[in-house]
Length: 264
Image 1 (cartoon, rainbow, N blue to C red):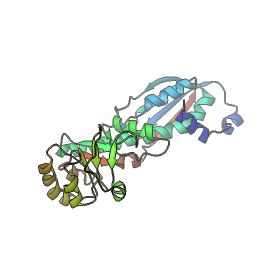
Image 2: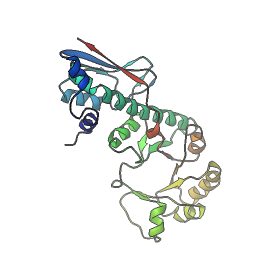
Image 3: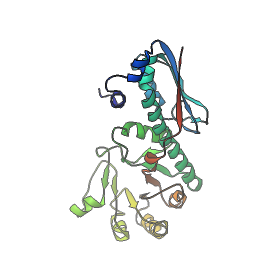
Image 4: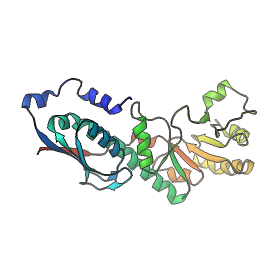
């Protein structure tokens, strides 16, 4: 079975760790990853399993979804020093990314639910190549949902599909049908055909006028909104929507972590 951690490690240490070889480092030691800022943990369990596969002993870590403060220990492991040095940078970088995604998701969700307690914050499939599984898991650790994992798990008829296929009247699917209209006219046309309308790059002012009309046409219709939604404007969208669709968590600034390795 493919192990993404082996790929990450191979990129960073394809042959030998020249520094530890030169210094003749041997014996057992301890690795501690500490956060310099507050955040939400994500994918620490996955990292722990990889350490165990490499013959190391994981002593403690903050579980996914749990909060931590600046100065808190995020992850601690013991074992062969050469292996700890090989895994050091990959581990720190990995957690700085996954925890940042979880932290950003939690922040966006908190802001959105200040104005709409039932709104869902869901991320797109625009995760980074090679990191999708972990970034999606980090979103859930932060309290978010996944809009689409992949092309294989849902139906989303986008503007590109509509340029190629014009006839939607006889669609039948066991899955929910989501349509992305390009303008107000299309939104009104597809409101009765869709289970979900994805209103992409509509301004809050446009949505204020459009959403009541859509709900009147189809009371069971779910309204999803997307496009340049940030911490600054998410409340404006959350008031009007059932689902906020965003890629923002994937591009969160990595958390500031540090690693300390000591000999036992």
